[in-house]
Image (cartoon, rainbow, N blue to C red; front, top):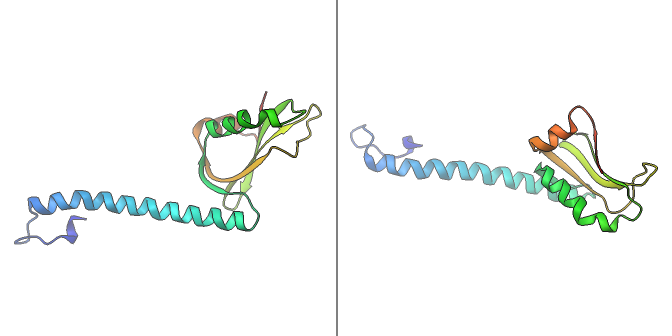
Length: 134
């Protein structure tokens, strides 16, 4: 970024070095803002089309938080499950509850398309498509 500032006599000055550091930070911030706008646009389009929201990363804490928050609503549930499958936009992740026969309950359930899973959640899945929480 320092190259965008005028140099006196072709040499970098203290002033241009001071200005370059904030400019580099602004450039990184603009890249992050652009990434978030793209993600928000994809999420809005997905929800508008009746699909699940698109999130950047979903964490084990968010998954467990959903189960804890909704377990009282899950009448007849004996376990909670997270199911993943590939999706052109990332990974489709379905969170829900199952009854004693292993049938998914209609509610409460939630689905996301995640660009990635945090390391803890990814490790819990391993090579499998389902994680069972009891």
